[in-house]
Length: 420
Image (tube, rainbow, N blue to C red; front, top):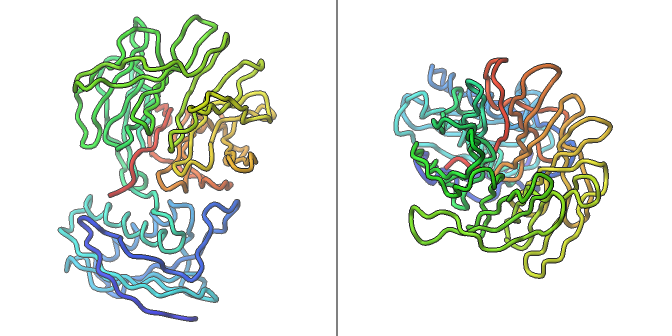
């Protein structure tokens, strides 16, 4: 094994992982059917704090869907921990085993305290560091997902941090059913559809830090749904013209802090249904769903010249397009042979790939901020729908986001910021 040793201190409270590359060659996260790597995690100090930390780290690494925990003799990579949690300073060494030719990296973490909740976040940062060094991605552990959860026949919004929170935080306390969340470009606010007894309206709420006060940004009841907060800071919504006709409009905020949305431009114009508009990360294309060919399909609209091209050509039902953060792919729900699955299509090649296995009915995809995972609504058999996530490259395995009971219905996830 070839080793080049480098040492870094990492300050866990803020700029935790700012180091550069690790291996002479790294592993392609986007490769379909990527093999899980065996990793051994061990502590040189046998303290209760270290034991709890290593157990938590093992769980989080497995939650990433990229690793399996193995004995040292069977490991592809070895992760050693020295010093102790009780001393509020710990060292880690990550090195290759077997035939893995890598640069050994040693780094330290200084801790502010040993509170259990605080250590969960520090553990997630350490696990993300391992992912970053081997795969050249930031890691999605500890990132935030907002989703709808049915309570008392109403959908309330909840927030959960991947592999960190065991109990989700409630976001909305209004008397409506809430869904269709979209994050602001700076990931501090959300807009969503609130379904009232008189019709839908569009609401906005600050979420990081979480404030319970909400404001109505579009009050015309029953006219709008599915708000999407674009990279250009405009809101793209579906306006319902008639029961058989809807189009996508661009709305903007005025300068006032309490401003309502003002109509800027009609983006689509068709006699049928056009909905679910999502602006690309670079602001040049609008992905949306239209039934103008007789079945719902996904189209791309060039926002500069208004030219439209059809993106999906396989199957008779393709909906809920969502852009990858890097703008290279779109994930969507497609039905093939009566099975609802998550697919992704590459914008460069137009090649389609199935992400979720046939063993689970899946819909409503949303990407992690580092492009590595896709969360979705899944239903197995007669059970209630839950939020799951899978590798964005596609795999047979997937993990549950929450541990809610069988009676709880979870829908409409929207992935927000990564762990800071």
